[in-house]
Figure 1: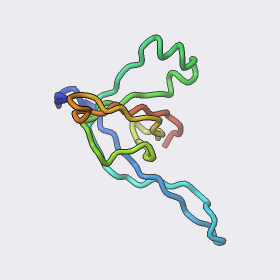
Figure 2 (figure 1 turned 90 degrees about the horizontal axis):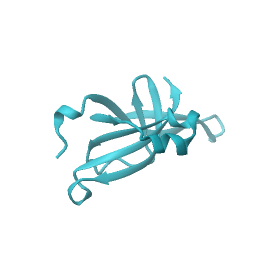
Figure 3 (figure 1 turned 30 degrees about the vertical axis):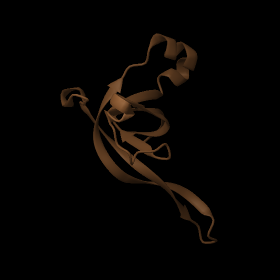
Length: 110
């Protein structure tokens, strides 16, 4: 079990959608708040920073949360005034059902 004291940040998972223009074609990507959870932010290892390159290294963030089956890679995250796109989800812990590490790329200031 992930200790509650280690989950010191609050993040919001968002679902993605699109709006349609007058002709019925996709016009704009929208985000709707889905769920707010507590998370721990994991630091990147020096090897990850080297492999990602200097610009990309500071844009990737790893969030550790308690396991939630409804979270998927088609969602986004809102945290600390930034929007993140989820790149990957790694279940961890006992039988991969205890916690999740969500790897996200920071893309837009809100």
